[in-house]
Image (cartoon, rainbow, N blue to C red; front, side, top):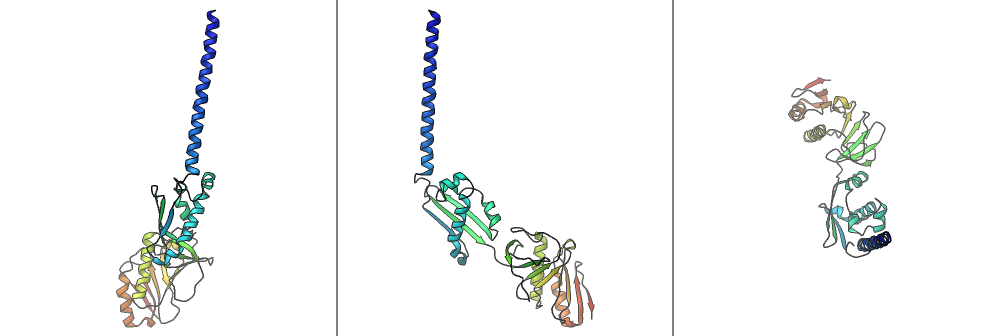
Length: 268
């Protein structure tokens, strides 16, 4: 008789346990479906407005395209993002560095979200074209004032645009620099010195990047070849070139600034 009661109690306990499990699962699924509906279909996370602004007014005309590109980018990151769509504020999260890898033309890209107002504001700036960097395989690239490669460029001729013909074997890539920061800063100074001294040379040549040297090759005989070291601040060359101009640059075959604070030259 006691065995029968114990078995009956055990069955009752199992039924109660099953009911508790069923109730727990039901409540969980109910909450989960409610949470899913809240995220996917309610207006709580639906974006009211998206606006992109640049400090450079001329780029604001491209703001709509940037917003569209960012929407496509965030939506394509996962199946969940694709399901939620680009108008869901939760989708706009992380991954900016990955976007910039495919869009190196942007130097600044900041996304700020206001969940309460359901607004997204985008601050962006584009890289300005400083000059053209051409490799010996005839590929040319636009670089900005920091030496960052961001766009393919045509092969330009003449002395209208700042250009470097790089005959080394270095591999360039979008979003990467053509030189170390310190070397590129000296390159900018070299271009500035040539401009200040009135020498119309805007094309420089690198033959061996390991030597960290660069050469100005004039197109006319009245200007000498000029050698610079990218490792050295070329400021000392400014006064020297002005002195050579008094002598007459047409009388000089080459000028060498590759040793700090020393000038070597050869007359024709």
